[in-house]
Length: 350
Ligand code: HEM
Image 1 (spheres, rainbow, N blue to C red):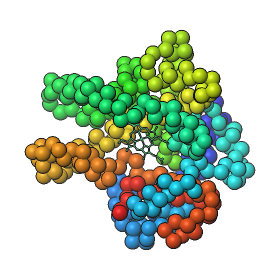
Image 2: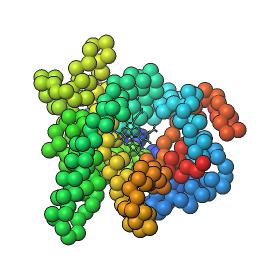
Image 3: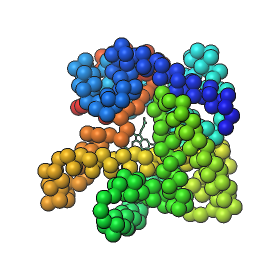
């Protein structure tokens, strides 16, 4: 690690936003409370209610906030909103800090060129390259492998008997085994992926403590180190998998080293962090609502609806945001170019 750069990165990406959000939370700002108050993070429903009572689009500390499904759809689908933000409009010290702290080895999935934070035309280019591997036909072909993997994990739980940690031994294992197989990365490294994935996911939330940031950065560095070695292996001996294809793209489509790292790191991390939480949340909800559990046991046709309901009720991704790329009117509000809209996915209401 290079301590000066780590410190600058921490300052601009976590300490500054944390101070700002903490102050907003103290003043009662709902987004500040959602992001900084641990009690509200655990039970965000009261804040969601408050926001709903204020209307479909209301001002907050990070711009406008919405809990409305219709407004969320409008903003997320609009060509007048993007995921990126204009760095050139940031104060000079912030721009300096972002540039000085920039280092591939410490780059997380919330930083460019991760698909999560880049707009077209780059986004379209990355998306086209990976979506070939996720067509309905391609994913259907993986179903038998997913079923086999789930059965083997459940058989193992049964053999062990007694009390088990369901997240560690099932909810985390199933998605990581599946995405590792799907991407062609070595499944025997899955415990490493889980550790590094947790580190990468932690950096998505602004305002980590210094200790947590340093350990997250260690995880990111370890993951980039693994990816570098993996890409080198595939350059020498490619397989049939998506990552081999990305490494061997024709030169007119080729990804830079940084783009390759960002794309594969996102696919690997997003591939299990979210699904692990979905499985865990589903078990907690079904344990609390036994009638729903009994209903699913007697009529398994209800499972797809149950999955949707868990995603709606206790979403693994609680919020996202977009910036207006032009002056635009949304739900009767004038949203000027550059303004941010926070979409509370976890609090959406029709
Ligand atoms: C329950 C499971 C999942 C949930 C709740 C979830 C949620 C989300 C959300 C909300 C976004 C959009 C974020 C935004 O644009 O602001 C997103 C994007 C993304 N997710 Fe997932 N995800 C899940 C599973 C997966 C899996 C299994 C993969 C990997 C194969 C994956 C890969 C991605 C990628 C690559 C993006 C970026 C797409 C783009 O920008 O075009 N996700 N996910």
